[in-house]
Length: 173
Image (cartoon, rainbow, N blue to C red; front, side, top):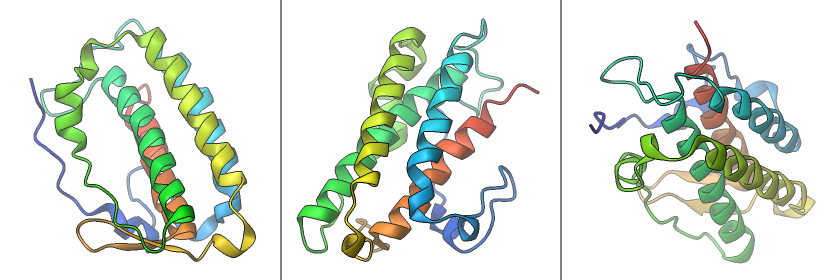
């Protein structure tokens, strides 16, 4: 069963701490992001080994498996976006409907072991890509389809909130 799509514009996390997960973009640099990616990715295999990994806590919240599949895809999408920003002048990012992807790709039915491997691999690729950003490329711009503009630096700080927040979403309570 699909979940009601999240229509929030999460770019506000660049300006204020997240009241839920505590992420605060003002406390990190783009140079911190690769280590944050690796630390985040290292936590997901344990989540994906839970006996209740495919169970939604309620009708409006993804299961830990669905969140993990989403985070894997976030790593992949932002690797593509980062590459575009480094290769093109002010590229416009293709719209990505994360909720439609979750349904189409049947996130909740994927194999947790495979998702774990794919998430870890995608995280490694993206962390390495952020480490390779030349010093003079952190202010290159890219545009989201809704007009939101990012520099390579703000893209890094915006992006990392997503996996951090979703790891908070699946914490054991």
